[in-house]
Length: 125
Image (cartoon, rainbow, N blue to C red; front, side, top):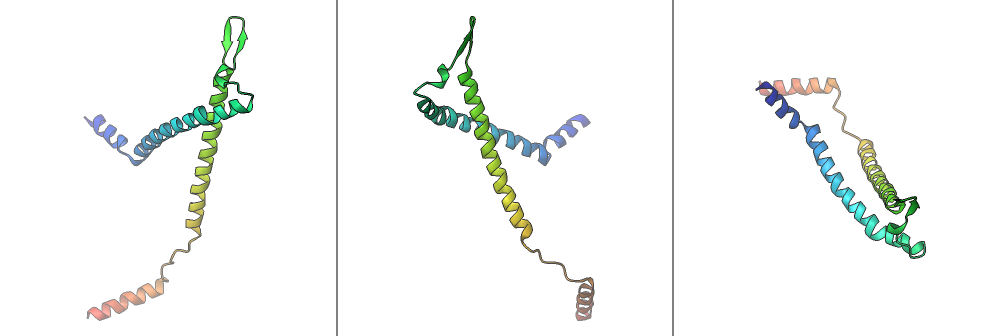
């Protein structure tokens, strides 16, 4: 039974839960970006390259067909996702730097703390 307890402790650790949430959100975000690339960006690229549909971009090597249009879409997916993640990290880092710059109230010197404790003790008597 101890292995079941260990597993429960492992599965409920903050890092594991955070990782699971990140994977789920990342998967959903990837689908959104894939749709953006496939449904909006690639048709525009098709117009720019003379009305050619990127799905039709094929090289025939013997009997095999190399569909490099789909590969092109995946490359653009990656570039867009990497750029958006870069922007998100940049914004998060900006807020972290601002938070670090804010002055934090320093605790009073040790002498003052001792004097306050003595004062409080004298008030009680």
